[in-house]
Length: 87
Image 1 (cartoon, rainbow, N blue to C red):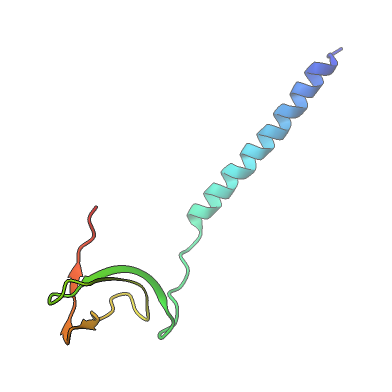
Image 2 (tube, rainbow, N blue to C red):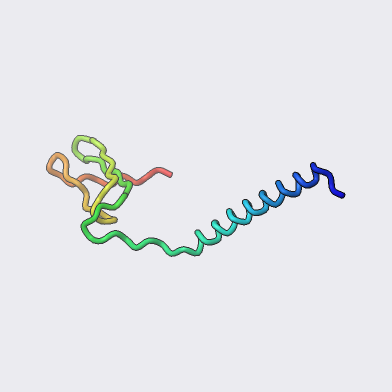
């Protein structure tokens, strides 16, 4: 006849196995899901773009725009220059 501690270890093992199984299935399902559709035209999208004024040197970071590739903003009556991200 098994001891009480053996029964507890077996129960803990079953609970742990079910927990790992659920996490594994959730990870597999998340990899097979399709990407969400892009937002409709005119709706704001998240971006991360930096611009620098060629005249005075002021820099801005744009985080929301109506499209993926927005036109550069104007500062000192000139279009600002795109600043490449440093990686």
